[in-house]
Length: 180
Image (tube, rainbow, N blue to C red; front, side):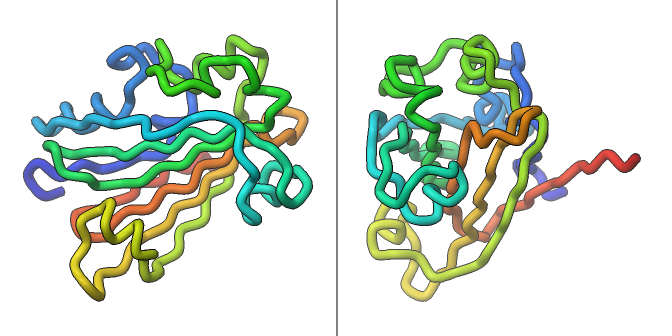
């Protein structure tokens, strides 16, 4: 691991935590002497993007609650994160607002009775859209990694879908898998 390199471990983001008030990103960055912050750009009910509709099992163009964030490392944009929830879970809750959620979204979901027990992740490399390029201050020709995560409850109900876009430089994704 390089000095000051932040290793993003998915498992840290999947369970309720006391860590830094629920801000796992801030705690991960701080663990290597860096500053991790985030800005909530928008939140509320939106038409589900095609792929998200499939993940959350809602009809094409159906409503979901979406939260768009930009993650920063030492003040520089490093990730675009869109998180989506079924409206019947998130409507009227802190998940539908732009305020920071005390204890984090995973804790709020658990308090609402929705606990993730399984997650599926897909990672692809692709070229960014122009808005992604601008938001992440990417150079021309620089690709991005797109990580899509679906969180399911014990009865296999989709409760959250995340789409994260990040430049590959300096990224290290860690997966810890329990076998047996």
